[in-house]
Image (cartoon, rainbow, N blue to C red):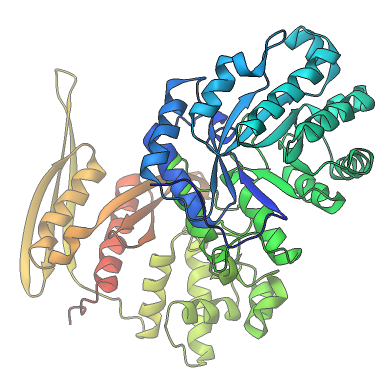
Length: 537
């Protein structure tokens, strides 16, 4: 394998990803070497120009990552970058062990972190301002003499610029004059605002002539805006992390930055066709780090192009662009219509079209569906979070009120036994009819709902083997207070997967078991519909 990428893009603008180093500092993320390799493959597939893999020599995991990446990944677009620091004070770069580890990593590009805030130089490095400049010059010139391309991260640059602008700029000059290709201005504390960033970057660019990049943290919620403000001021290198992962509240989010550059600025920063993979890549990386994807993330969230209000739906029916800033397909996402008690006729018509159900312009039918949704949501149902249950409701109304049936339930029962030794037993019995056959099935589970799920599966799998593929992947319970005076109502949402897709169903009742049963019935019914099984007569 080789780490030499063959990108079709020129070198005029860099998209630099630091998920594997800076992003991994997020609380709750603990990446194994295998995780880092998987993420690197996804990022290369997306088409970023540079992937910062970590700090070789600083810990065994990062050292192993670089060794394995050289052998196991054939990079198509990205170049692997090793991260490290300038040499120690009072030494030489050629003698510094951590500088040697950077060379030993085999990475053709190296990013050095350098102090650009005078107080950090004196208090953290415990050296003089002049010696700090020499540390930058010596390390950059030594690494370039060894055939490495060097980027320099000026840590705490904006705070340092505020304290002593001339010294902060002298660090930029020292790095650039020593041979650094790009000098990155880092908002390490994340406290800057876009207008401030734009002003500082413009001044530093004019005063130093160096090629500049931007690294923004999101502590003010402005990391993406600050990154784009730096681009407006002349920065040609952006450092980001997938899904905005990073220390404290995170870093500039790679995906909205790239989407803005490509779709709003007209910059070609990804290889042809890769932007359409953005939603998939975002969710795949979230899966690797074991964090639920943000549903409301710009561009790639499942709600990014979801429309709920009836007014919006009416406009979208005429022209989707009226309430969407881009075509969702450009970033691999889709428009979704949410049906709720706010729904109007247009919402239902568009949702039917999305589901492939022809309502035939039947205003009476559409009106019935709207009223049915509002009536049931008043009781506690929620159809915007349970598309599968809504589709079953819609099909029932299309069939004149006749529900879609694969089985007829005679009765069900769940028993929880509290034993003297402190253990519990959960058992459920289901009696139903399917294809003319009466079936009685009993099963145990680790709770009453799990026992019911197993009993229903035991009963039906003999008749419908397609159900063997189904897995219950999420289960949520919410107590709805004061829905009927002082009586509480329970709402259950269940997510089910068949290995190729996922759907959600809802149940509402005065107890959690009955609500769960409703959601389970819908989940299995929809699973059979999805599998192409013909309903029973």
